[in-house]
Length: 171
Image 1 (cartoon, one colour):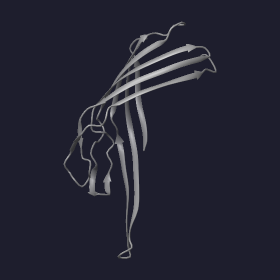
Image 2 (tube, rainbow, N blue to C red):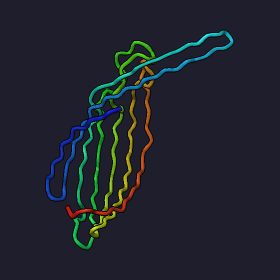
Image 3 (spheres, helix red, strand yellow):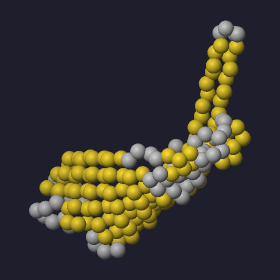
Image 4 (cartoon, rainbow, N blue to C red):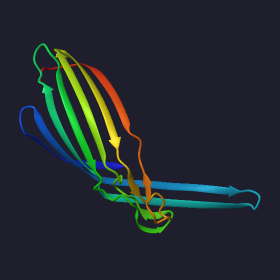
């Protein structure tokens, strides 16, 4: 799967920023399997090459720097983001179970809250990031042979990360 994201970032002020990201998705799945049936001395093979090309789901992010960076204190930034299901959520051009075009979108809205903190003590810096992402209910065709959409909810996500960095220059 390849994804090329086109983004637009606009700083409303020194501390407030808006980001919009729209991905172009290019994915391909190739399957090949052989079923061996020794009792009847037969092999049965199935192969498929599935592709999906198109726009993905649009993401809108708002960032606000709550505590600006100063020499003796950390910087603290809060992000809020919403992902809109703008990509194709269902398989298209369905001919049979292994001949159709893959969807490029997820089929559900998603919303997240991020907290980012950084402290620079040149030539070192320490960063931490916390994120909670809530995924809303959606519906889409899960099986290309069954044309009725299925209601689903992908699990929510909590992420925590951190890093210790060594800076080679001061910019």
